[in-house]
Image (cartoon, rainbow, N blue to C red; front, side, top):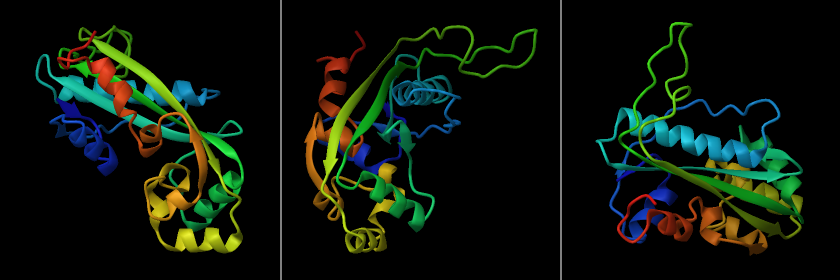
Length: 210
């Protein structure tokens, strides 16, 4: 099995669940399409990551697990902050409110192969002819509510460095991030970065696709 992610949190969740994975992250364009819904985006990115690794790095029949997590509020997608000011902006936006964390997950097999360029010109290696291998994807959504945050709290949290590599500028599992959260509705591990229980049900008892 291959985990198409270098996220330490996803790697840890997979290992804690008893899965042995080679780590082979995917390198894809993650730019949203114009007007693309956040949930459609996160599923598309997970599928693109899985297809890229399955077609280029996986042995025939080998499973590839890929995931992508976003934070969204008022229709805005909050990725990783560009800098400390961007992190503060995001935390002010989330302060005292409820937002959504969505993780797209995709399971693919190594039979996937790149599409040959057509006579009309080059095309994306992972678009066009449907892939030969199996592919299964889903999206998990969790509502997260924050306490109201003072400017002093935001300044101190950003100064800790914890928000800087995390979507939405916080990590619920972090020493500081857990102190922001009033409550959640849904899967906690989805907010960490991988809805491991739902993934296990898609993998099945023998770790095979449905």
